[in-house]
Amino acid sequence: MVKNSSRLWRGLAVLPPFLRRILTIFIAVLTSGFFAAVLFIILLHNREVELPAWAETFVSNQIDASLSDLSVSFERAFITLDESWQPSLGLKDIKVTSSKAPGPILLNRMAINLSLARALEGSFRIRTVQVDGVFVTLFRDQSGAVTAQFGDFDSQFEKTPTASNLISTVDTFLLQQALSSFHSLDARGITLEYIDRRSNRRWAVDGARFNIKKTDDKLVARADMALLTGGADVATLETNFEHVIGENESLFGLSFIDMPAEIISSQLPALAWLGA
Image (cartoon, rainbow, N blue to C red; front, side, top):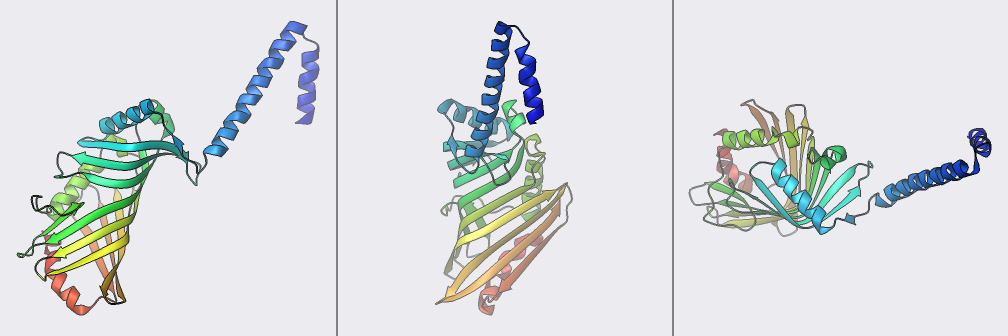
């Protein structure tokens, strides 16, 4: 490296003065630009750089255009480099609406790992999504029908669709071009409230987690949560789900740890929709 540098400067010495000055300035600018770019990347790692208003508008428009039937609004957007030094788009205080959903989905924070080159071309290719701060309400009425909603319960909302319809909707959504490179979603800080009018009981869960991974056409989802069952007793509920996009059959599993038998028996009818 030192030998190459000395040869370069000796080569410049034989050039005419004006040309030598031009090349020297060019090399200095190029070197400064390189180190500035390296410094910018280092500073960007695990730090949030807020986007200006015009860039936030561009991001919002691109998301809406890339994901059909979804509208995404947010209070603030920023970019950063994640732990793997991959570019990540961050959003805070997000509201997601859809014509197929009766109400908006409110999120505290979302991080989207995407193809930066495609994004600069105006095309979003989402790879991973991280979500924090989701509130979900489950309501079981006197007849045993269950409704799942984002946010507080609203009796005007429609009942939860059958398992087959829900899976079909997910399949269609994941086949969009913007999600052709998608491979994982990780949701943390989920708050879940379960209102059971049939047994006249109510449960609340904080800190639930949900993860879904996509490999080729195979989806694998897992969720876990801790439930206060009375006093200082805590029970754990774990679920898993496997499905191949486009196929009718899926595998669903439930695991109860330290869950009182009376709670399990009272809620088994609520799972009947899985066989629909």
